[in-house]
Amino acid sequence: MPGQAVESQVILVVGGGIAGITAAVEAAETGYDVVLLEKTASLGGRVAQLNRYFPKLCHPTCGLEINFQRLRGNARIKVFTMATLAGLSGARGRYKASVAVSPRHVNANCTACGDCAKASQTQVPNPFNYGMDKVSAAYLPHPMAYPMRYVVAPQVIGTPEADAIRAACKYGAIDLDEQPKTFELAVGAVIWAVGWQPYDAGKIQSYGYGRVANVITNVEMERLASPGGPTQGRIVRLSDGREAKRVALIQCAGSRDYNHLAYCSRICCLGSLKHAAYLREQYADAQVDIYYIDIRAHDKLESFYRKIKADPQVRFIKSKPASISAGENSDPILHGEDTLTRELYDRPYDLIVLATGMEPSAHGVTPALKLSTDDYGFVVPEIDEEAGIFAAGVAAGPLDVSMSVQSATAATLRAIRAVRTNGAAAHKGQA
Image (tube, rainbow, N blue to C red; front, side):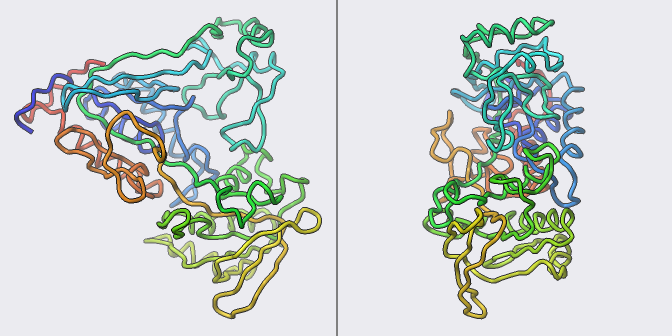
């Protein structure tokens, strides 16, 4: 790209999920300096919160740990957690990026020994489990967190409890005086990999999420099934701990609906098929009903769909359920009409799982840089080729894990091309 002087070949990656991690390690292993920003306390994004993921139904440890090793072993990568991009000025090859960092009140001396958690008495909602349980106010984000460093919740800062937490640390890792800070970086290109957020099921009022007991979302189901989840992997009702053996999985909960998300999020059908498999593995006598408009099982995953469909204890019901109401003994009752038979149904279940879709993480938020988006708020993958700003992963549209990785590789190649000097890779970073 002639005509623009390249002053920095540093590649800035915004977002530390699977796409951002992939972009960072691939750019660094090609010989470029990388700065990776993640707004939460640890890397891994939504993938880290899954119980298993396609195509091989691996535990997240399988894919993330090898990438964490690549991060740890590459001096070209600088990782900042609790960090966001606050501003960006300049042009390709000579950007000035302003980075805002929120305090975690735990510094790099932390050994993750857990003594701070033992000294804490306050319990706060656990964001990793979508608030379905609580953790100590001094907590490790999750068992495979990267960096493996505790966080002190802001709720206790300035209290005697915070002083007790600091006194319990033998390594001087607790910094109660830490304040928000900003700093600037010189970068040459930006990869926008901020991922997605689950659609707010509470907006689908007829389904009663948040009002009717034992109605949960697909992302919450992943945490229920995970050994690190709020029930240590037991799929039970949070209302009373009863085993969930009669379960309804509702497809397109808010998706393909102009009142909510007008598009298909690609992964929801397969996610529900996976949830049916979780239930059948755990309970031999489970009965699972999948309510669907259409089933989307792309490429080689068609065989997984056929395997689940062949299970006589998994029933596929073509229907867009109308509503959910509260029944006796905290049983949610599903109401609707079977599209094929025209039968009206009112069926009680132990648990109802809403397959909510993917919403852009930047939806409703004014980002630090001007982004070209489609009609649904997803960033156009090639935001601006000449500007050297690119989108990766689900920031660019609904994708599964493997597709997100492919998207990140493509964005990395574009970013490398954007910072090359006259076709020669000088690889001189300024991070």
